[in-house]
Image 1: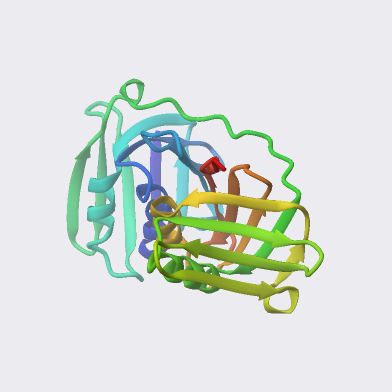
Image 2: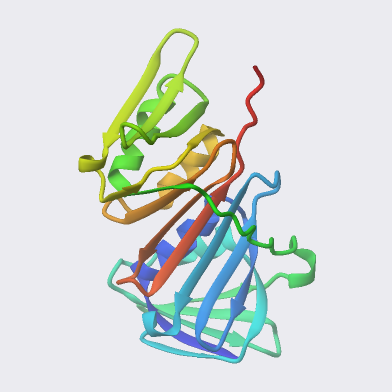
Length: 247
């Protein structure tokens, strides 16, 4: 059983955060939250999304799991204006999701959850550095790095208490330096990892520019980025595996 009404912009933000990595996913219709956890086909990027029941205008669910074509669901939700309300209801008999908004109704065929990749476990990483910054600052570093390279280095200098976003191209280099005073907060520790820019760019697309993003880093460890949306009732965690550097 699942029946809910949600503000379109909140729902679009939730779907955006997952669709940057996967085209289909399992959705857990928990009693207290709408939740998705997925890993991309190459096992490089992971997303964990939770949207609390309180983020919905109304929400009833009994803990079921459905499989959805995320690209299609996002296209449908994208037809709503940001302040529209989207009505969602699961038809148990037909295993379809009925979606209504502003006079438009759409019946979405669901996918067998068993045919979708298993949800990943979130590794318990105790990463030594934590940087809290605005989404716009992260986006600026990603955009600049994209001009010169397909890799991006994230690094913390504990002595200088500075966060660096760096990229080296064949001819040009980019270096964004953010001191503690430029950031919301910084817990400096040994951190220096290289990542695929394509993945980080996709994740960055989903992060609102005004979001407060917590970035956890280590030395040649995955990066963990989390932020809230929907007035704090939605939460997204991205994880991205590093590119191991060969000397």
